[in-house]
Image (cartoon, rainbow, N blue to C red; front, side, top):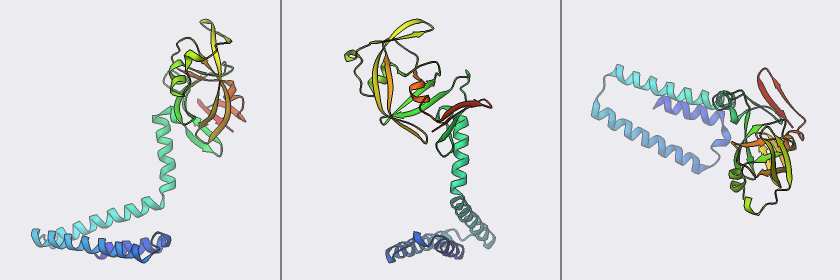
Amino acid sequence: MLALGALIAYLAWRFPDAVSSERDWMNITYLVALVALVSTGLVARRRPRLSAAAGHAALWLGVGLTLVVGYSFRHELGAIGERVLGELVPHRGVATGAGAITFQPQENGHFVVEAVVDGVPVRFLVDTGASDVVLTLFDARRLGFNPDGLAYTRLYATANGMVRGAPVRLGEVVVGPIRLTGVAASVNESPMNGSLLGLSFLGRLDSYEVRGGALTLRQ
């Protein structure tokens, strides 16, 4: 209980705005009293040896200090977590500065970027040879387009020959800290393995480059 009281006192001193009203202190007092009641009941029931009780107290003190340290370094730990997640899930990317995000390649060497298009998450294969953002029929339907009602008036030269696309416009495309509005795109008439992130998005960035095996986008 002394350790718990010391922890509460430290937190109140370290984060004075966290407890700003009498109601907050009443809630803390209630919780401390509840912990004291439960702890007393457990001690009375189990009658542990003094050494065991001291060991338990030290354990809970260590847990409390760990929580305090973890909260104090929450921003640094969050950044480390983002980097680890970026390595494990390459399409998520890692923010590397104001308006910049970096992606690691997939196992096949290609870069896949997860964007939020008009509130819907969509994964794109980065293709600097594509003049537009190209949507598959599946992704087009997810974004609210009706492929059967579109006009496929554009012709694109691909490795598989000429294909037709229907011009559309995306209200907002967000990739990490990057946000573009009014992005030109097209819906591919033929089946595709995935949507493409082309120059209608990439060309509006300040830069995009591959260095050290990683792709960095900057706005």
